[in-house]
Image (cartoon, rainbow, N blue to C red; front, top):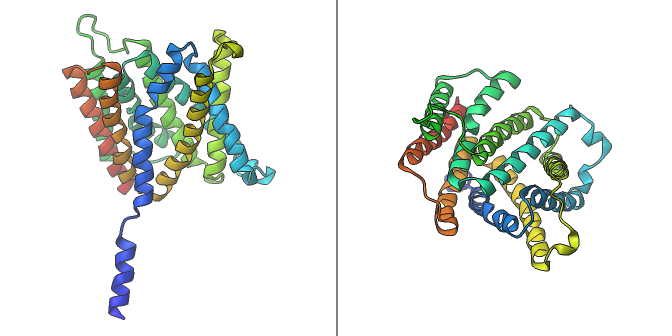
Length: 303
């Protein structure tokens, strides 16, 4: 009997590799996803148009797969306005992310995006009434110090982002943190409806921005291989959203953030070999502090 109990305990203690693999795979793909968007931009399909197209494909796939979750009682139960704000914030997050990685230096954009733990602490305090711990202050200090080192320009004495890509990366992380906190605040709606809200929000924001910029291309001018690339990206975005949500649901937050930071490693290697981009020594120092802050933020979840 003792042997049977020991066997059961070992099985319970054995880590489930599938959610970890899902997060790791998601981090790898996110670290590479900037490249096809750059190719589309070079082919004449702007970032907003490519974003709107790929996310409407993901939305259509989601409407088919999650059609059973579209009952009126499920959508309009709880606090339905939160779904609207989640979609709106996620819309800006994803559009700004794509614009940042297209027009900016990949690693600078991603590192500024990963200031998200700093904004998360602030929003969690304001919207969830979570008290700031000692570790929270350390995350804030490390994040701000890293950002100062990366953004500081001695010649002008300015701390403002120096490029359009920097601004997009910074704002994407800000809105990403807000959408995550709103998602945590919404305890009524499931992952399926939240995912649909995200895909719908990105589609509307990106399409609206494209109309504002008058960037919509003539459909007949787009080559067949570009259509196939857009279709493939849409399917990847759909699968990636579901896979990452599955991983986040089954992996402790302190472990998940460490795994997701692997995106930076993949992006650094890809940016060097695919785009010939390399970071300066000061950017490496600032980036290391921002990553350390992200790792430090994991301890907040254990308090």
